[in-house]
Image 1 (cartoon, rainbow, N blue to C red):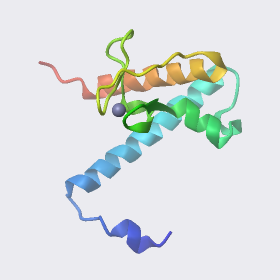
Image 2 (cartoon, helix red, strand yellow):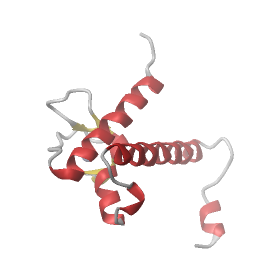
Image 3 (tube, rainbow, N blue to C red):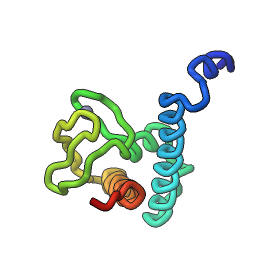
Image 4 (cartoon, protein in one colour):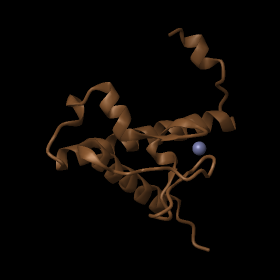
Length: 120
Ligand SMILES: [Zn+2]
């Protein structure tokens, strides 16, 4: 956890740095959605174990492995794809946490669509 490691890739205006910034924004947004939807479902996100939290905020792609839910492409409800490689993802939404995960994924997707919606 030495700070010079974190600073090694830093240079202002650098594209990679802006990418990190964007990832931090997305991570915060994902946590916020997971937390508020947990509350609506009647339990506390903070009381989940780290593994349960990971489960409700990520999905597994056969190629890219574990990715955060905001990387998911939910454009077609019946054919959910990995936003990174385009693989079709099995996303059943079964069980208490599966249902929550699905809700979180759609909440994040809607927010991103609103944010990135560019008129054509
Ligand atoms: Zn993938």
